[in-house]
Amino acid sequence: MNRTRNALFAAKLLALVLLGSAPVVAQENAATAKLMQQSKQFEEEIVHVSDNVYIAVGYSVSNVTMIEGDDGVVIIDTGISLDDANRIVTEFRKFSDKPVKGIVFTHSHGDHTNGAAAFFGEERPQIWAHKNFGSEAQPLVAGGVKFQSVRGARQAGFKLPREQRINNGVAPVRYPKLGGQAFASRADTKPTHFLEEDRQTIEIAGVELELVSSPGETNDQLFVWYPAGKALFAGDNFYRSFPNLYAIRGTPNRSVRLWAESLGKLAANDADVLVGGHTKPILGASKVKQVLEDYRDAVQFIHDKTVEGMNQGMTPDELVGYVQLPENLASKDYLQPFYGHPEWGVRSVFNGYFGWYDGNPSNLFRLSPRAEAERVAQLAGGPDKLFAVAKAALADDDNQWAAQLADHLLAIDGDSADAKVLKADALSKLAGGMVNATARNYYLTVARELREEAAAK
Image: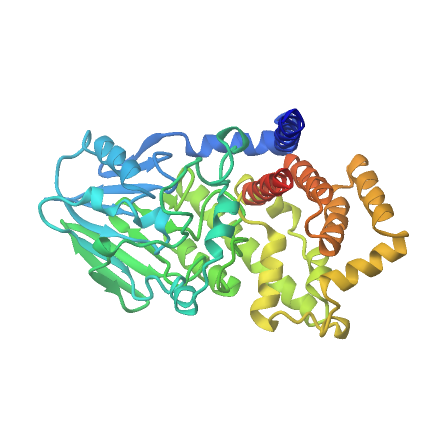
């Protein structure tokens, strides 16, 4: 009996050690300090940019705007949840008690649409969206693809404790109740009116708005131009970060070329105010023009330079070294890789045009991960020596190499608790130096999962 108790105690102790051994990600280095500074971009604030335009920043994951008209108000995007949206309604009612006559969705992602019902009054308002509304999710649903929700939760850090989450790069920390769905749209808040052409002028409550088709982050993206207030509402084609040309949760291809074209359309307006889907608005005509042109130039550069390298026969792994943003763009505060990353954009451009095959015939029929790992282990002198090399790499802060070697060890023995903990430690150390919030969250979440698996052994 004592032996059994001792064994149980030892097992519990091991579990605590393994789970508790997750390195606390340093907050004192330049990368995490920079990411923490970014949180100022979504501190709660109602930004009053003109007599009748109010923007709720930081109250939800995405920005929500109210434009007051003659006998009602128009809402642009509605936040990620009813809880967030109800708080925003309370704030907006301090400025106007007119009923909501219209809602415009810039695109179908749930962080912009799920709060819509909070803005309903006695009469259901018009709800405007692009004719392709929901097109990003439809192929996944039709194909029965479900694992994206797991990857989405990793990217967003939904499974991490609060102390391990700084922010989501362009948004504050939230723990939504939707099971990690990225594109959820509620049946009771479906659009009632659609933008069918490239652009259309509508009038709601005396407010004249121009809706413009602007494919980019999604194919159902539109931007809103409010000429009376000289204000642009860009949706997720702009926010203060390098754009998410590819989301690591997994998405259908986002056309980088069309995204750049849409940014050109935005820049063509004589705007004094630029409201992105996230982060604080840009104010001042010259600043808005500069920001949009820089943003367009950065996206266009990623596309054009990648295509240039592709035409020289470069593979994606070669292209990510070849395509480097010019310093005059890379140094801009609104093009830092807090959310998207240039390297992911490069790979997405290649994949969008050429698909998965990189052009190297050695990769047409690769060895399986296990077969390759066994050969790597043989080169190292066996799995034990390979493990020692991986541990040495970790000790030397060669963390990417340590993680990749751990992958070889796990390909040979997927149940190895030692290899799982080693990889978890490597990922946690990588996270500590990562300014990109989505990569950081993904590293830390998978590290946590690996430690839980190891502790369960």
